[in-house]
Image 1 (cartoon, rainbow, N blue to C red):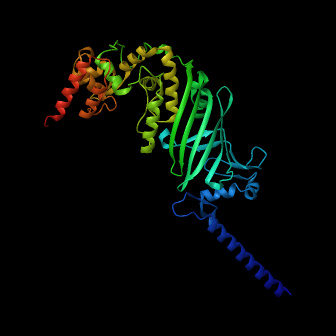
Image 2 (cartoon, rainbow, N blue to C red):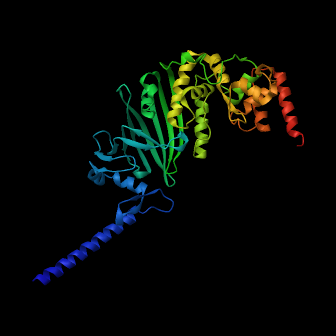
Image 3 (cartoon, helix red, strand yellow):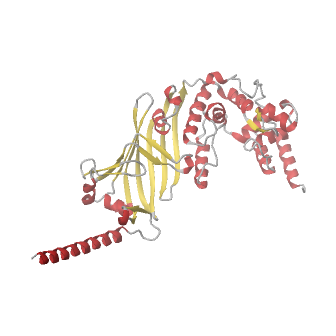
Length: 424
């Protein structure tokens, strides 16, 4: 009898093993990614496999599977993720899969200068409608808390369509208070405790998955900042020595604007057009290569923000630049920059600080005795003071200078072109 039971049990275990093996083989086949498709690793230990991400999404948004996921909590690189399921008809015509993370660490595109953003809470909803996994839509909710304890939720509507191995995603954030965005993107900034931030921000973003190609178009309305004390910067004392007054319409000032910020007199302290161009350039490079800072933001960097290339530092620049435009005005901001801008170092390693010191260091003359070519040369090396400007850079800056006699500009451009044509 015992032997018969053992035989029966053995056959039952064999049948179960065959059944489980067949089930595992079926899962592997069902989730196996086609060549080139977006894939990820799921499972643990001997039950790890490469799975097609589109197929996983299709399964997760299938009602029979989605209901079993409801309430499931799993660890992830972003933080603990809790699944939820909302049946069709409860909040819309289609069933909704929700993924909630609290707190949540979100990956960021390399073009923004930092790899991760940690938020108190995040939730994404997915629905697929009648299009299967070829078209998805939903919402992205990001929760933030200001230093004053104000709770804010930034909400985006998104749509995705299958494109090659992954998805082309479009996101739209409607207008939300600028202070809420600041609390979300830079929660650790000490300035948020004292700054009064008014205005609103909206944005449209495009994301290609899994490649991570990213594009962003922000819209800012009525941004004003107060409470940071920039009104005291007009005659601030610094290690550069006493401030001097530079001719705002002279060749040096005009050349610096041509080289660094051609829309200086048009923007409110930040230049969205230049910012978007910088984001696009950095996205192509896969890293921060172009800053996109206005001259006003560069003053903020010199005064308080520092050189760290991160999203938080850029937002700090933005706060101070927005306030400076109101408290100081363009003329004083330009004077501050010309007094504080670094123009490299001496052979002894001392900082060449301000345009006055730069004129004496590079040309041995007082700044008010610089000729047009010398002024353009000083402006041209601002991006890399340790290296002499190339002939192409000199010519480009000279061609961009505005507000000087046109005859003088043409003569200088012609002189620089002739010098390029002469044999070395």
